Length: 329
Image 1: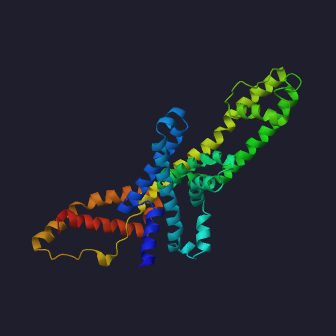
Image 2: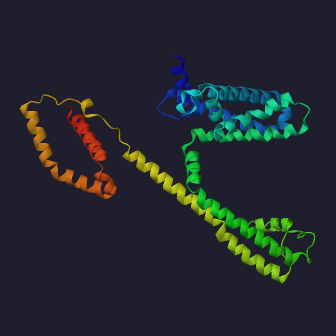
């Protein structure tokens, strides 16, 4: 009984199933709570709002913290229902070390650290970790999950682009340091200082606070700006193409993921009268040409996938059920 309850709670907390009422309530409840808590954190930074609504904002934070803490404890309790984390101790430690659960812990940790160590001043700055609660939305958003999947899939290409950008940044900053150090010793006093100019130039932001003044510096800076436009477009293009492919793959999976219905579960052949049999026979004969057109269209759309026996069986099953429904047989 306890294992059944634990399994059910784990399914509600870990999955997002729109057809499950409790899972839907959990998704919307946590999402609304995250939005309220982050909005509360933002409003607290305004002295006027914080002064006038101090108690109200404090209550929202307390309610949010209580709920998030309860969810975290509940997740650690029920995670052993998953075979991957079935060990009472090591399974929970393994589950607690997963990225999303670590984010859940970091989001509530600052409050308890300030209670345990009230005299450590720098802990006040850990409130920024409350914004990590926004990342909890990944669990309930298919779009965010798709982006993470794209990053995992394209990690080699993105890493290669990142290494290229770093090499170019070091090279550009070094050249600009030697070109501008005599003319602007305060702005280009070292290669690390020149890297700020390299970053804003490569990203084509160009704040204008640091810029070359020597002819060779201007020439090199102009060339680097053109290179930056193309170079920084690479990661965006990689992610965009990967995201498009991921969305298309999900659409194809949804369209091909027809429920497999065992033949024994199909409705038995009804006892038809001679008139009904003749009606069906006539309809089938008249629809033969239409069926051929449908099959040819399916072959053109799905290609070799249409030859898959499972897909043909699912299509035949669906047509059979639709025929029974249409003729009310």
